[in-house]
Image (tube, rainbow over all chains, first blue to last red; front, side, top):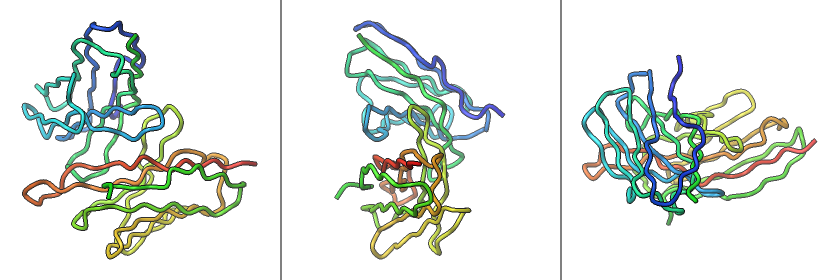
Length: 112
Length: 114
């Protein structure tokens, strides 16, 4: 049982480039989330999804986009990368909104 | 008042010590409470849920005080491997009043020394 899998683990982007962070879960969870965590700071919710075809903004959605075409996958798209998007990105899933989340191992992104 | 507030620490304790972390939350209607553990450069992992009557898991005891909107985590007989950041987690409420997403505190850092 793989849980939540994120790829890539590390990435360096140049300013203005774009990329997609991949997230997939094999637990048949309806709810999926994207967080970013800056050094010494807490988790900030970027986007979340309550099921295939349904997504909603979190606290810090600007500069990001998501899609949820299947229950398993919830990719996060960065368009026109900026240095302010340098962070660690965590994907998580849960069976319901208030159930404990399972996190992926994270993607460490640096924008230079 | 912040939604979930924790003392950032760090708490530096010797092995074998008992240490307690506190957390306050702002929404009195919240129903779900958790403690997560996050090791350096790793993802958060669920440590334990927090129940109204209080609950224990080995050396870890969690307490909830709804009247004061306060959650605590007690670690007895600290081990070197307990060194990590401990995140207090509470659910939000949606506009319709249904239980919503989880809000993570910024965490309290614990360092257990030999």
